[in-house]
Image 1 (cartoon, rainbow, N blue to C red):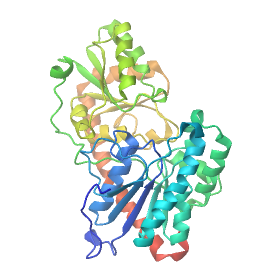
Image 2 (image 1 turned 180 degrees about the vertical axis):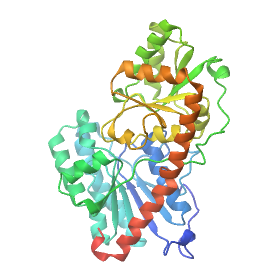
Image 3 (image 1 turned 90 degrees about the vertical axis):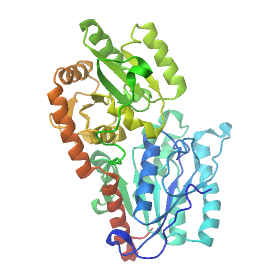
Image 4 (image 1 turned 90 degrees about the horizontal axis):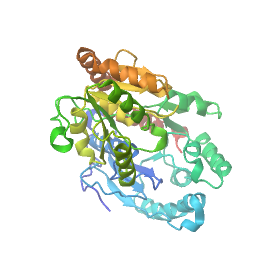
Length: 413
Protein backbone atom coordinates (compact mmCIF):
# COMPACT_ATOMS: atom_id res chain seq x y z
CA UNK A 1 0.00 0.00 0.00
CA UNK A 2 1.70 3.17 -1.13
CA UNK A 3 2.13 6.30 0.93
CA UNK A 4 3.54 8.18 -2.01
CA UNK A 5 3.90 7.46 -5.69
CA UNK A 6 7.05 9.55 -5.95
CA UNK A 7 10.10 7.42 -6.71
CA UNK A 8 13.54 8.44 -7.90
CA UNK A 9 15.33 5.30 -9.00
CA UNK A 10 18.05 5.74 -11.60
CA UNK A 11 19.40 8.89 -13.23
CA UNK A 12 21.90 11.36 -11.88
CA UNK A 13 22.47 11.25 -8.15
CA UNK A 14 21.75 14.52 -6.30
CA UNK A 15 24.15 16.25 -3.96
CA UNK A 16 27.13 14.49 -5.50
CA UNK A 17 26.30 10.97 -4.34
CA UNK A 18 27.84 8.31 -6.67
CA UNK A 19 24.70 6.14 -6.80
CA UNK A 20 21.02 6.10 -5.99
CA UNK A 21 19.75 3.20 -3.92
CA UNK A 22 16.56 1.24 -3.51
CA UNK A 23 16.32 1.00 0.29
CA UNK A 24 14.25 -1.48 2.28
CA UNK A 25 13.33 -0.06 5.71
CA UNK A 26 12.13 -2.75 8.11
CA UNK A 27 10.44 -2.05 11.45
CA UNK A 28 8.82 -5.17 12.90
CA UNK A 29 7.57 -3.58 16.14
CA UNK A 30 3.78 -3.36 16.28
CA UNK A 31 4.17 -0.62 18.90
CA UNK A 32 5.53 1.81 16.28
CA UNK A 33 2.74 3.24 14.12
CA UNK A 34 4.25 4.68 10.96
CA UNK A 35 1.55 7.36 10.86
CA UNK A 36 1.77 7.96 14.60
CA UNK A 37 2.56 10.63 17.15
CA UNK A 38 5.24 8.82 19.13
CA UNK A 39 8.88 9.84 19.02
CA UNK A 40 9.74 6.46 17.51
CA UNK A 41 7.19 7.07 14.73
CA UNK A 42 8.80 10.41 14.01
CA UNK A 43 12.23 8.79 13.91
CA UNK A 44 11.14 6.24 11.30
CA UNK A 45 9.30 8.77 9.12
CA UNK A 46 11.96 11.45 9.21
CA UNK A 47 14.77 9.02 8.40
CA UNK A 48 12.79 7.70 5.44
CA UNK A 49 11.82 11.18 4.30
CA UNK A 50 15.44 12.33 4.43
CA UNK A 51 16.62 9.33 2.43
CA UNK A 52 13.87 9.91 -0.13
CA UNK A 53 14.68 13.60 -0.47
CA UNK A 54 18.32 12.67 -1.06
CA UNK A 55 17.13 10.91 -4.20
CA UNK A 56 16.78 7.34 -2.97
CA UNK A 57 13.79 5.04 -3.25
CA UNK A 58 12.48 3.86 0.14
CA UNK A 59 10.03 1.07 0.94
CA UNK A 60 8.86 0.59 4.53
CA UNK A 61 7.78 -2.84 5.80
CA UNK A 62 5.87 -2.62 9.07
CA UNK A 63 2.91 -4.11 10.99
CA UNK A 64 1.27 -0.86 12.15
CA UNK A 65 0.11 1.86 9.77
CA UNK A 66 -1.19 4.34 12.36
CA UNK A 67 -3.78 7.04 11.81
CA UNK A 68 -2.13 10.46 11.48
CA UNK A 69 -2.00 10.44 7.67
CA UNK A 70 -1.17 14.12 7.26
CA UNK A 71 2.51 13.23 7.54
CA UNK A 72 4.34 11.88 4.51
CA UNK A 73 7.75 10.18 4.68
CA UNK A 74 7.93 10.00 0.87
CA UNK A 75 8.10 6.21 0.92
CA UNK A 76 6.08 3.23 -0.25
CA UNK A 77 4.50 1.40 2.68
CA UNK A 78 3.90 -2.35 2.92
CA UNK A 79 1.72 -3.22 5.91
CA UNK A 80 2.22 -6.82 7.00
CA UNK A 81 -0.47 -7.38 9.67
CA UNK A 82 0.73 -8.45 13.12
CA UNK A 83 -0.34 -11.55 15.00
CA UNK A 84 -3.04 -10.49 17.45
CA UNK A 85 -3.78 -13.79 19.20
CA UNK A 86 -3.43 -12.74 22.84
CA UNK A 87 -3.36 -16.33 24.07
CA UNK A 88 0.01 -16.75 22.38
CA UNK A 89 1.67 -14.24 24.70
CA UNK A 90 3.94 -11.38 23.65
CA UNK A 91 7.03 -13.56 23.12
CA UNK A 92 5.32 -16.01 20.79
CA UNK A 93 3.53 -13.27 18.84
CA UNK A 94 6.77 -11.42 18.18
CA UNK A 95 8.71 -14.57 17.33
CA UNK A 96 6.10 -16.04 14.98
CA UNK A 97 5.57 -12.73 13.21
CA UNK A 98 9.00 -13.18 11.63
CA UNK A 99 7.68 -16.01 9.48
CA UNK A 100 4.90 -13.79 8.16
CA UNK A 101 7.50 -11.12 7.39
CA UNK A 102 9.76 -13.61 5.65
CA UNK A 103 6.97 -14.95 3.42
CA UNK A 104 5.78 -11.53 2.31
CA UNK A 105 9.17 -9.89 1.86
CA UNK A 106 10.68 -12.84 -0.01
CA UNK A 107 7.90 -12.59 -2.56
CA UNK A 108 8.53 -8.87 -3.00
CA UNK A 109 12.33 -9.22 -3.15
CA UNK A 110 12.10 -11.95 -5.82
CA UNK A 111 10.25 -9.53 -8.05
CA UNK A 112 12.42 -6.55 -7.20
CA UNK A 113 15.36 -6.90 -4.89
CA UNK A 114 16.39 -3.75 -2.98
CA UNK A 115 19.99 -2.58 -2.94
CA UNK A 116 20.30 -2.28 0.85
CA UNK A 117 18.35 -2.86 4.05
CA UNK A 118 17.86 -0.59 7.06
CA UNK A 119 16.28 -2.21 10.11
CA UNK A 120 15.07 -0.70 13.35
CA UNK A 121 15.73 -3.39 15.95
CA UNK A 122 12.67 -5.07 17.45
CA UNK A 123 12.40 -7.88 19.99
CA UNK A 124 12.80 -11.38 18.50
CA UNK A 125 13.20 -9.82 15.03
CA UNK A 126 15.42 -12.26 13.15
CA UNK A 127 13.71 -11.87 9.75
CA UNK A 128 15.84 -8.92 8.66
CA UNK A 129 19.11 -10.74 9.28
CA UNK A 130 17.88 -13.81 7.42
CA UNK A 131 16.65 -11.84 4.42
CA UNK A 132 19.89 -9.86 4.21
CA UNK A 133 21.83 -13.13 4.12
CA UNK A 134 19.57 -14.78 1.55
CA UNK A 135 19.57 -11.82 -0.84
CA UNK A 136 23.14 -10.61 -0.10
CA UNK A 137 22.05 -7.17 1.06
CA UNK A 138 24.21 -4.69 2.97
CA UNK A 139 22.23 -4.19 6.19
CA UNK A 140 22.35 -1.50 8.87
CA UNK A 141 20.72 -2.33 12.20
CA UNK A 142 19.58 0.57 14.36
CA UNK A 143 19.23 0.04 18.13
CA UNK A 144 17.49 2.66 20.25
CA UNK A 145 17.36 0.95 23.63
CA UNK A 146 17.80 -2.34 25.45
CA UNK A 147 14.33 -3.54 24.58
CA UNK A 148 14.39 -6.57 26.86
CA UNK A 149 14.85 -4.30 29.86
CA UNK A 150 12.40 -1.73 28.57
CA UNK A 151 9.64 -4.29 27.93
CA UNK A 152 10.47 -6.88 30.58
CA UNK A 153 7.04 -6.66 32.26
CA UNK A 154 5.22 -7.95 29.18
CA UNK A 155 7.65 -10.78 28.41
CA UNK A 156 7.14 -14.36 29.59
CA UNK A 157 10.67 -15.42 28.66
CA UNK A 158 12.99 -12.43 29.09
CA UNK A 159 16.03 -14.72 29.19
CA UNK A 160 15.13 -16.02 25.72
CA UNK A 161 14.46 -12.52 24.39
CA UNK A 162 17.88 -11.48 25.72
CA UNK A 163 19.59 -14.34 23.90
CA UNK A 164 17.90 -13.29 20.66
CA UNK A 165 18.86 -9.65 21.23
CA UNK A 166 22.49 -10.49 21.94
CA UNK A 167 22.74 -12.71 18.86
CA UNK A 168 21.05 -10.24 16.52
CA UNK A 169 23.25 -7.38 17.70
CA UNK A 170 26.50 -9.36 17.79
CA UNK A 171 26.07 -10.57 14.21
CA UNK A 172 25.24 -7.14 12.78
CA UNK A 173 27.87 -5.84 10.39
CA UNK A 174 26.88 -2.23 11.01
CA UNK A 175 25.06 -1.03 14.11
CA UNK A 176 23.72 2.49 14.64
CA UNK A 177 23.00 3.43 18.27
CA UNK A 178 21.51 6.63 19.65
CA UNK A 179 23.94 7.29 22.50
CA UNK A 180 27.48 6.65 23.70
CA UNK A 181 26.30 4.64 26.75
CA UNK A 182 24.36 2.33 24.42
CA UNK A 183 27.49 1.89 22.30
CA UNK A 184 29.56 1.03 25.36
CA UNK A 185 27.02 -1.57 26.46
CA UNK A 186 27.27 -3.29 23.06
CA UNK A 187 31.05 -3.13 23.07
CA UNK A 188 30.84 -5.22 26.24
CA UNK A 189 29.00 -7.86 24.18
CA UNK A 190 32.09 -8.22 22.04
CA UNK A 191 31.32 -6.01 19.05
CA UNK A 192 34.30 -4.23 17.56
CA UNK A 193 34.25 -0.46 17.75
CA UNK A 194 34.45 0.02 13.98
CA UNK A 195 31.07 -1.71 13.55
CA UNK A 196 29.17 0.75 15.78
CA UNK A 197 28.17 4.31 14.88
CA UNK A 198 26.69 6.71 17.46
CA UNK A 199 23.89 8.72 15.86
CA UNK A 200 21.57 10.56 18.29
CA UNK A 201 18.02 11.47 17.43
CA UNK A 202 17.47 14.53 15.26
CA UNK A 203 14.89 17.06 14.14
CA UNK A 204 13.52 18.71 11.02
CA UNK A 205 15.05 22.18 11.51
CA UNK A 206 12.75 23.70 8.88
CA UNK A 207 9.53 22.46 10.46
CA UNK A 208 10.78 23.20 14.00
CA UNK A 209 12.18 26.72 13.98
CA UNK A 210 11.87 30.03 15.84
CA UNK A 211 9.16 32.23 14.45
CA UNK A 212 6.49 29.57 14.00
CA UNK A 213 3.19 31.28 14.97
CA UNK A 214 2.35 30.14 18.50
CA UNK A 215 -0.84 28.33 19.39
CA UNK A 216 -3.42 30.61 21.06
CA UNK A 217 -3.26 29.21 24.59
CA UNK A 218 -5.67 31.82 25.90
CA UNK A 219 -8.40 30.65 23.53
CA UNK A 220 -7.69 26.98 24.18
CA UNK A 221 -6.94 26.88 27.91
CA UNK A 222 -7.39 30.39 29.29
CA UNK A 223 -3.63 30.83 29.73
CA UNK A 224 -2.74 34.52 29.69
CA UNK A 225 0.10 36.65 31.08
CA UNK A 226 1.96 33.71 32.61
CA UNK A 227 5.25 32.02 31.90
CA UNK A 228 4.47 28.72 30.16
CA UNK A 229 6.57 25.70 31.17
CA UNK A 230 5.96 22.99 28.60
CA UNK A 231 6.42 19.25 28.16
CA UNK A 232 5.76 17.34 24.94
CA UNK A 233 5.73 13.56 24.88
CA UNK A 234 4.14 10.39 26.16
CA UNK A 235 2.89 9.96 29.71
CA UNK A 236 4.20 6.50 30.60
CA UNK A 237 5.52 6.23 34.16
CA UNK A 238 9.24 6.25 33.44
CA UNK A 239 8.96 9.64 31.72
CA UNK A 240 8.50 11.15 35.19
CA UNK A 241 5.61 13.51 34.46
CA UNK A 242 4.36 12.95 38.03
CA UNK A 243 7.23 15.17 39.17
CA UNK A 244 5.39 18.15 37.74
CA UNK A 245 2.66 17.75 40.36
CA UNK A 246 5.15 18.34 43.16
CA UNK A 247 6.66 21.34 41.40
CA UNK A 248 3.20 22.74 40.62
CA UNK A 249 2.15 22.46 44.27
CA UNK A 250 5.34 24.22 45.35
CA UNK A 251 4.89 27.04 42.83
CA UNK A 252 1.24 27.38 43.82
CA UNK A 253 2.20 27.91 47.45
CA UNK A 254 4.86 30.43 46.42
CA UNK A 255 2.39 32.20 44.07
CA UNK A 256 4.83 31.97 41.16
CA UNK A 257 3.19 33.20 37.96
CA UNK A 258 3.61 30.24 35.67
CA UNK A 259 1.54 27.42 34.24
CA UNK A 260 2.60 23.92 33.22
CA UNK A 261 1.37 22.70 29.83
CA UNK A 262 1.68 18.99 29.08
CA UNK A 263 1.14 17.95 25.45
CA UNK A 264 0.75 14.29 24.49
CA UNK A 265 -0.40 10.99 25.96
CA UNK A 266 -3.14 8.55 25.06
CA UNK A 267 -6.75 9.41 25.85
CA UNK A 268 -7.05 7.28 28.99
CA UNK A 269 -3.85 8.69 30.50
CA UNK A 270 -4.92 12.25 29.78
CA UNK A 271 -8.33 11.71 31.42
CA UNK A 272 -6.67 10.25 34.52
CA UNK A 273 -4.29 13.20 34.81
CA UNK A 274 -7.06 15.74 34.34
CA UNK A 275 -9.06 14.07 37.10
CA UNK A 276 -6.01 14.11 39.34
CA UNK A 277 -5.40 17.83 38.77
CA UNK A 278 -9.02 18.47 39.80
CA UNK A 279 -8.61 16.42 42.97
CA UNK A 280 -5.38 18.18 43.89
CA UNK A 281 -6.61 21.68 43.05
CA UNK A 282 -4.13 22.14 40.20
CA UNK A 283 -6.44 22.36 37.19
CA UNK A 284 -5.44 26.00 36.55
CA UNK A 285 -1.76 25.36 37.20
CA UNK A 286 -1.12 22.02 35.46
CA UNK A 287 -2.91 21.58 32.12
CA UNK A 288 -2.98 18.38 30.07
CA UNK A 289 -3.68 19.27 26.45
CA UNK A 290 -3.83 15.68 25.21
CA UNK A 291 -2.49 14.20 21.99
CA UNK A 292 -2.16 16.50 18.98
CA UNK A 293 -1.23 15.94 15.32
CA UNK A 294 2.50 15.96 14.65
CA UNK A 295 2.19 18.95 12.34
CA UNK A 296 0.76 21.02 15.23
CA UNK A 297 3.62 20.31 17.65
CA UNK A 298 5.79 23.29 16.55
CA UNK A 299 3.01 25.79 17.25
CA UNK A 300 2.56 24.41 20.78
CA UNK A 301 6.28 24.53 21.53
CA UNK A 302 6.37 28.05 20.09
CA UNK A 303 3.87 29.09 22.76
CA UNK A 304 6.13 27.78 25.55
CA UNK A 305 8.73 29.88 27.35
CA UNK A 306 10.59 27.01 29.04
CA UNK A 307 10.64 23.34 28.01
CA UNK A 308 11.27 20.35 30.25
CA UNK A 309 12.21 16.71 30.18
CA UNK A 310 11.23 15.26 33.53
CA UNK A 311 13.00 11.92 33.16
CA UNK A 312 14.61 9.62 30.62
CA UNK A 313 16.91 6.57 30.60
CA UNK A 314 20.65 5.95 30.65
CA UNK A 315 20.53 5.01 26.95
CA UNK A 316 17.71 6.94 25.22
CA UNK A 317 18.15 10.00 23.03
CA UNK A 318 14.90 11.97 23.53
CA UNK A 319 13.37 13.33 20.32
CA UNK A 320 11.60 16.07 22.26
CA UNK A 321 14.90 17.62 23.36
CA UNK A 322 15.95 18.30 19.78
CA UNK A 323 12.50 19.65 18.91
CA UNK A 324 12.70 22.04 21.85
CA UNK A 325 16.16 23.18 20.83
CA UNK A 326 15.25 23.65 17.17
CA UNK A 327 12.42 25.96 18.28
CA UNK A 328 14.97 28.08 20.15
CA UNK A 329 13.70 27.16 23.62
CA UNK A 330 15.80 26.67 26.76
CA UNK A 331 15.42 23.22 28.29
CA UNK A 332 15.49 21.82 31.80
CA UNK A 333 16.47 18.15 31.76
CA UNK A 334 17.90 15.39 33.98
CA UNK A 335 21.67 15.00 33.91
CA UNK A 336 21.77 11.66 32.11
CA UNK A 337 24.59 10.66 29.72
CA UNK A 338 22.63 10.85 26.43
CA UNK A 339 21.23 14.26 27.41
CA UNK A 340 24.69 15.55 28.34
CA UNK A 341 25.73 14.63 24.79
CA UNK A 342 23.18 17.09 23.41
CA UNK A 343 22.83 19.79 26.09
CA UNK A 344 25.58 21.60 27.95
CA UNK A 345 24.61 22.88 31.39
CA UNK A 346 24.38 26.68 31.46
CA UNK A 347 24.61 26.85 27.66
CA UNK A 348 21.47 25.46 25.98
CA UNK A 349 19.64 24.86 29.24
CA UNK A 350 19.95 23.59 32.79
CA UNK A 351 20.57 20.07 34.05
CA UNK A 352 19.33 18.68 37.36
CA UNK A 353 20.01 15.49 39.30
CA UNK A 354 17.69 12.77 37.92
CA UNK A 355 14.67 12.28 40.17
CA UNK A 356 15.29 15.45 42.18
CA UNK A 357 12.10 17.47 42.64
CA UNK A 358 14.13 20.29 44.19
CA UNK A 359 16.57 20.29 41.29
CA UNK A 360 13.77 20.40 38.72
CA UNK A 361 11.94 23.11 40.65
CA UNK A 362 15.02 25.31 41.20
CA UNK A 363 16.06 25.09 37.54
CA UNK A 364 12.62 26.06 36.29
CA UNK A 365 12.39 28.89 38.83
CA UNK A 366 15.74 30.27 37.72
CA UNK A 367 14.58 30.47 34.10
CA UNK A 368 11.23 31.98 35.10
CA UNK A 369 13.10 34.76 36.88
CA UNK A 370 15.42 35.56 33.95
CA UNK A 371 13.91 36.23 30.48
CA UNK A 372 17.38 37.25 29.28
CA UNK A 373 18.82 33.85 30.27
CA UNK A 374 15.96 32.11 28.47
CA UNK A 375 16.67 34.03 25.28
CA UNK A 376 20.42 33.40 25.39
CA UNK A 377 20.01 29.69 26.01
CA UNK A 378 17.35 29.43 23.32
CA UNK A 379 19.67 30.96 20.73
CA UNK A 380 22.48 28.60 21.71
CA UNK A 381 20.13 25.62 21.53
CA UNK A 382 19.02 26.49 18.00
CA UNK A 383 22.60 26.96 16.82
CA UNK A 384 23.68 23.64 18.27
CA UNK A 385 20.85 21.55 16.87
CA UNK A 386 21.21 22.99 13.36
CA UNK A 387 24.91 22.28 13.45
CA UNK A 388 24.79 18.74 14.80
CA UNK A 389 21.31 17.23 15.07
CA UNK A 390 19.30 17.82 11.91
CA UNK A 391 17.88 14.87 9.97
CA UNK A 392 20.04 15.94 7.04
CA UNK A 393 23.15 15.30 9.13
CA UNK A 394 21.91 11.82 10.11
CA UNK A 395 20.80 10.87 6.61
CA UNK A 396 24.13 11.91 5.09
CA UNK A 397 25.92 9.67 7.60
CA UNK A 398 23.64 6.72 6.76
CA UNK A 399 24.34 7.15 3.05
CA UNK A 400 28.09 7.30 3.71
CA UNK A 401 27.88 4.00 5.62
CA UNK A 402 26.02 2.35 2.74
CA UNK A 403 28.52 3.65 0.20
CA UNK A 404 31.35 2.03 2.13
CA UNK A 405 29.43 -1.22 2.51
CA UNK A 406 28.55 -1.39 -1.18
CA UNK A 407 32.17 -0.80 -2.11
CA UNK A 408 33.40 -3.48 0.31
CA UNK A 409 31.75 -6.88 -0.35
CA UNK A 410 32.97 -8.31 2.97
CA UNK A 411 30.86 -5.69 4.78
CA UNK A 412 27.52 -6.94 3.43
CA UNK A 413 24.90 -8.75 5.48
